[in-house]
Length: 141
Image 1 (cartoon, rainbow, N blue to C red):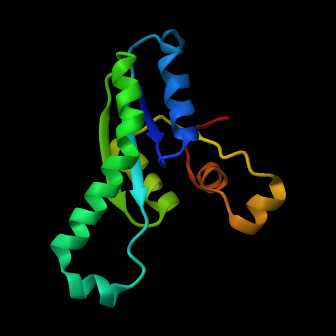
Image 2: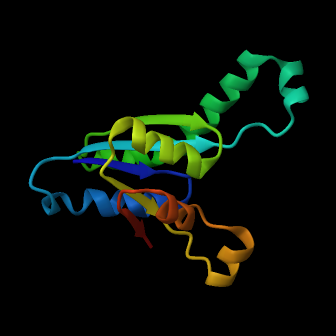
């Protein structure tokens, strides 16, 4: 089984990681675990062009590694093997593409616990993933 833990740098991602680490016996075989984060693109293309591609790429790498570090550290401390990665783009779309590219069987995501009204107004990555993915999505609160 292949599991994707979608991390966003929040305490909710840490809770999702802790949940996965605390339930190793749920599966017959040890799953392949991916930890992935998505950074939205820099909104000002002209500004990005002025500072250069390397500066922008370094910025993305630094920001994404900062998001991944606490989750990956927690999994490593719990003895859970994983692979980490990141991409740039629309969060739900990038996760959908990652799932398809890697044959992921289950997506695990932490919930921010917003109300239904807040989800209507702000949108919710978890809600979008549930609607667009063809694999189960486990939302950890």
